[in-house]
Length: 338
Ligand SMILES: C=CC1=C(C)c2cc3[nH]c(cc4nc(cc5[nH]c(cc1n2)c(C)c5CCC(=O)O)C(CCC(=O)O)=C4C)c(C)c3C=C
Ligand SMILES: [Fe+2]
Ligand SMILES: [Fe+2]
Image 1 (cartoon, rainbow, N blue to C red):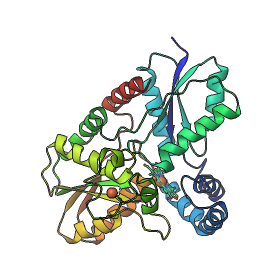
Image 2: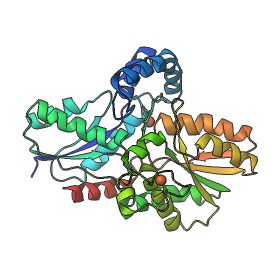
Image 3: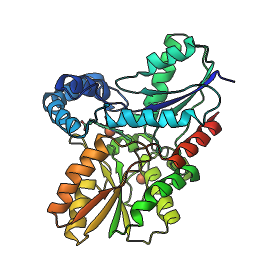
């Protein structure tokens, strides 16, 4: 059978590091109502304010990590696609980006035009958030409806606790941990607290106490990004045989003035440097491919900040990227999705 495609969907990057391309990308990204979940006029005003200074700052940051072949995120997602092509036996493996190119619209229309009848949609996010997973699913559904595409579309659900994902994380990180370290920080992308509270199915669980995410019921865990991050971290530490106190969790990439989930990575880097940690390992398990958030925010700015606070060495553990065990794991997860 060759009519069942696999579509790997990642977040996307600007087309280039020019300020104009970065502005266009940020505008598309931040105007997504699943990302800035405020009424349109408020969102438009807020994004217009962000777009005064941010494109120049982000363009500078992108330029510092950009590769000859393009954005690391896009290049690494393509490498994953190529590696998965050898494992997925049912049809083509394609990639699409939620923002920028290649767009979901172009790729889904092309697949349907090629005679593909089923597309397994794989949003490349281990933990669930409306701002990542839901927006991909809704956008893909909208394209199928708008262009009347005859496509079945099973979806890969968040795999934050799946042994296949955790084992791949362990296999890819082990060589770094075996070289010795004083502390391991698992830094996940953050979210505004508002996004979590909104999805709390009980309406009375989220942020009622400091440990709410560790004591989440199955119904809360199913939708709580922070609880899923903590569960991934706990499962990783267990499988890796880490002792309590050797590792901790934080949340990075805060944007704007709203309260985001804590503890913040920036604050932890300071604390750990000041507490006498000399060699710090940082892993970013919410990202399956290295990108501006890992390479620039942690690998460059985070390293500088940690050293300024008294640390000696920050080692950034690469994301899963196209690690062979991850390629096999993701193939199996996608097979199970349908
Ligand atoms: C891993 C999951 C991600 C979540 C959850 C997420 C939420 C989220 N992000 C922003 C704002 C920005 N994120 C940016 C980059 C970026 N974000 C993710 C992943 C998640 N975002 C990735 C993989 C990337 C990297 C893209 C790349 O090209 O390398 C950026 C752009 C960079 C910058 O200017 O800092 C912004 C802005 C919000 C507001 C949000 C949830 C509300
Ligand atoms: Fe982000
Ligand atoms: Fe919680």
